[in-house]
Image 1 (tube, rainbow, N blue to C red):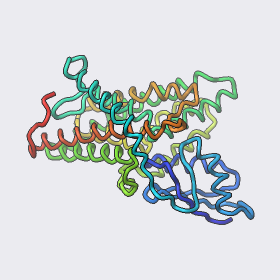
Image 2: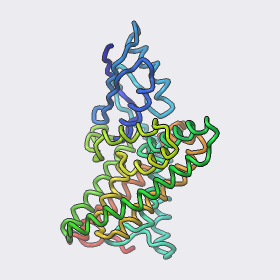
Image 3: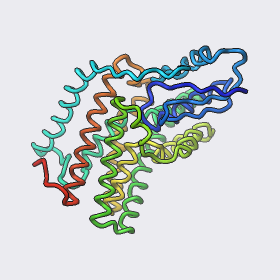
Image 4: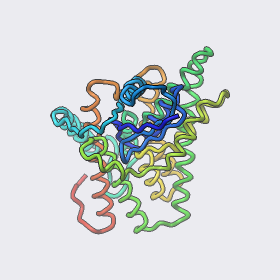
Length: 339
């Protein structure tokens, strides 16, 4: 057994650690994998015979490339494809313009001077569902679907997974809201947590843009070991496994999910917390449902650079908007928008 260290290209968030480790753990020659977002590196321990590190990296890339990652022995110079912004910026601007327009005409109450609305939570869920943060959830869906499809059961496992996911987000979202009520956060506590939500979204947006690699070390999420345990649940052979895995996705290390969980805490309400998390989960549902029946994955496409930059700009807009709201609620600045 020998240990090899490779540099990883294509990492955006903490979930990338879990995804790369999960995929490489399936390689027969590997006994241990440790991935790090902060250094964009990956340590592999295994028996590869007399193969040179360059050859090993090429072999492992066959497994990782479909998920948008590549390994290299030498650290590559960070390269930003600025031309992607020519397409990404107008799309992101159009998305946010529609977002504001819906508020202006009163179709939905997406934004408010001091709170994240249910519509906002839904849209953030929609954005999250097509980001790398949801890649692990998508992988779990595909894994469970493939496993039960071999036994001739194609639909029921997928339904159980999504029902479990929606139920857990409603019930546990309510529990988080109740926890906030028990602590009686007050104005100061709510402002601090709202500020934290904004910072999480801003860091996520910057990482999706992939402009400053050093920012990745500041990504705030749940401990990685929770994601590893959740990912291992898919191997349990039981009729209720899809439901249990769906419930457990509430605890995956996804920055989008954590930002909504923190906001649910600030509501101090069981019902509001439950609805916020439910709206977020419903936002992720369309893409995850498509994943159940196909190999959909934007990170596999040639246009993935444009896509992630578009999502990054949208998330940054949400982050800065929430930051301004938090500062306004704390009385530190005057409202800048009249939505």
